[in-house]
Image (cartoon, rainbow, N blue to C red; front, side, top):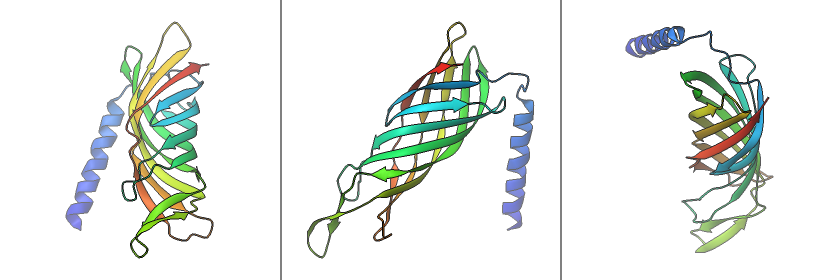
Length: 184
């Protein structure tokens, strides 16, 4: 236990020193932006910088997920807010890491294989909850109000129906998205 505590303390001190060495005089690339995302998630989005290094991004859209246990593809409509640390990499490029939540709904019916009956049985998965990580790069054009972003957002989804009967979790293979935003 003492070794784990020591390792965590050293990791936290290392991260503190590395963040302290970054240039804090860099301003955020813009204040606000609106745009669209295509890829594993298709959405309209809004991104804002409350501080120079902290960004909030809200995506409202849909995605297709492969249920590798049951062999079907549910469509999920969700709101995906993300909190991100964003820093300059130079020449208009920025890198970011963070995490977020997903809250939404799936199509009215999903099918799950029943070993007892030997067939797929329809279930109603009304609600979808999830958590995700986010990381990627962003480029802000200097002369025009445009920002381009590429990111990955792997995570987990919990599918539940309105009676919390037979919930299950799926890994979200949300491995590549591209966003274009108007900045202001």
